[in-house]
Image (cartoon, rainbow, N blue to C red; front, side, top):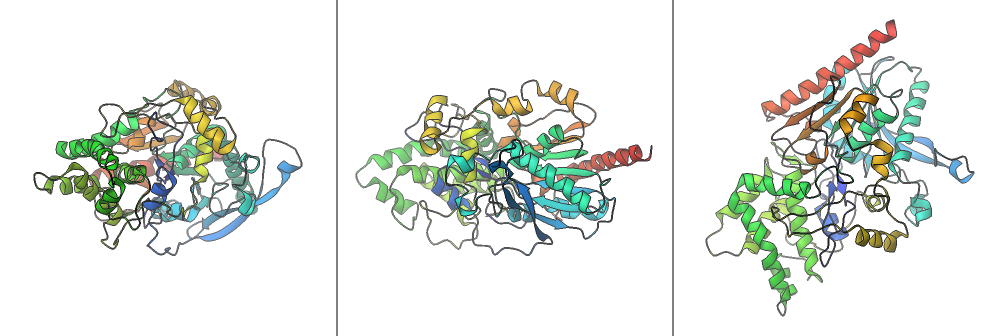
Length: 502
């Protein structure tokens, strides 16, 4: 999943969400950047592009394993990776920190060009901190995912504490403890940025949380909202396109039920090897449509995969150009191929047994413990209707990890219900930026909470599109969104510095 522009989420990138449907197999559920069942997820990753050279120095910080106990085991030290760019910085100037997501921090740094774009304006130091248990920040090395005993230290609260400890130590070592810190994050990283401002207001003076679905828990956001939003993106591009995709699932199921059906599907989908389950083909299609909706950027991009500008519209053009009489499944396959093969270099497709090149599978653990985000598909969706059954989901997690989910822990720890009151009474200086073409926007904060907790919402924006590098092709609405973000952050820093002088 490497790319040439802003992150993420990020990736989101990146990752399966805690939700299970009452279908014969688990409902594909996605988090910023990753797909569903392992192989479908791994197939989506852009593995062909060589790693770009990043304008950062790589450092490692001796981090404590457990910030919340004083047991001997909890005092173990692991080395947490972070990337730093001090090209424009001088002592006392701002420090902009990216709160790492569920993946390799270099991927997020590569895809968060916005920070590199604005660093000269602020004379800011940039710091990208890798999330524990991802990338090279493995507390137990190759044994980190071995068991619940090791994975038990993977959660959002430990990650936030990691960020706080590292930032404080960095400022002390730089002899610049007065430098204002602003945290940035996209997708899950955006959730962490918002929560960091809530939990550590003495460490960060503000947060920019892009595409951060902090309300995707409990029953705060309708469970069908994510897939309804994906479907709306396609329906607005072309009603025929929406109806073709909606009808393709029945054709896929019917084909798989025939004698030799899987071989026929393998031929239609140009698979490198014959598939062993119809769900591999279903997830391959599903992931393509979901991720394309998420990254429906107004310019060419290479975040999840190389894609043209407004790829949802391009997918629908492919479907709409098919001659009368073509099957819905063949049209859906052709559209999905845009996502996997826009470059035209793929001779066949690996639908099963792909590689997790960015190490995102730690999200499965997080989804099975604290990140329980129920999802369903309504009759209005272009995906097959499905429901969420908590007990079935919990049983799957117990079988896989030997742990029970805590479905209400996030809202207990950070709040969720009546979020406006929670935020208004307890914090300030947060920007929630969202684009309504991003299906994750439905779970974020979409209205201003106070004069300093601002919601910047764009009609055509996609998943943390504001974090991408600026280009000459950027539409006016995106340029204006970034301008507002810079202006708000400038005010935070101005007010902070004014307070210092008193």
